[in-house]
Length: 258
Ligand code: HXC
Image 1 (cartoon, helix red, strand yellow):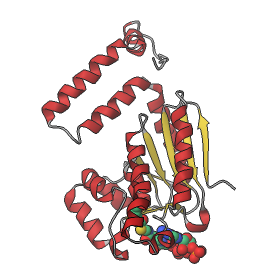
Image 2 (cartoon, rainbow, N blue to C red; image 1 turned 135 degrees about the vertical axis):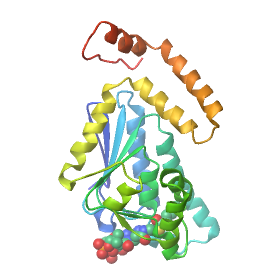
Image 3 (cartoon, protein in one colour; image 1 turned 180 degrees about the vertical axis):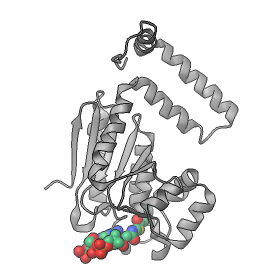
Image 4 (cartoon, rainbow, N blue to C red; image 1 turned 90 degrees about the horizontal axis):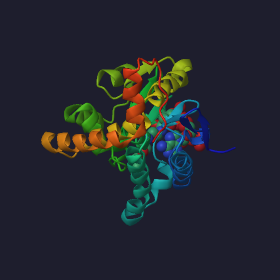
């Protein structure tokens, strides 16, 4: 059976990680399979939103400890570029990515979820960055993204203690956007994806880009960048469709992605 499945429903791509034997532990071959699925989503102009989820009790239980164990410094440097590269790729994808976290998201698994735009959690999730309990630290962006999402103090507590937290705690610190019953997780993810997919797809991509810029800019630079991106949208057909639809009092408009 395939470890990574890709399918499309409407304008939403769905990637399902299904390597139950080791709880979706991230090794080089598995990362390659995920990248292949991302290629499929990226090559399809008609996919406006992507959902990533796991099966069974894990989203991803971390990087593959067995694969990492024997590596020396040079080898692990090369290896961690795979995980880091995957997460940068996800973060920089033009379309929004929703992590539908169904179970354990630990270490490299949480790091991957941190690179997604929206995180939904089922009631039973367990989240944490336990790398320090293994004598190492995050190697795929966790020390950089977690503080930006939950603040430095909370990130330090989670990373220094290696504590694994539940859905309620994760929601309280803003690590996940919402908690849903396990059986409703995918419906909730698709509902959000559909809500995003109804809006102007070029505008959504522009919004993602502008929000990402806020991480690296002063407020002045950011507002300038936003104005640039905003004004470019007035060269699109979708701007005329959206604003024209309002002026004609149309209830629903269909954007054309151009
Ligand atoms: C390799 C793993 C694994 C991992 C689970 N497995 N997590 N193998 N790497 N990260 C394997 C187990 O060895 C076991 O294989 C099978 O999956 C089922 O796991 P169990 O432990 O039997 O399940 P359970 O008792 O339910 O416990 C679940 C668990 C535990 C709490 C999630 O598996 C666990 O603590 N896993 C490690 C979590 C972790 O430390 N993650 C961070 C890794 S470091 P067998 O063959 O025995 O059935 C990291 C660094 C990132 O991620 C760096 C990025 C570059």
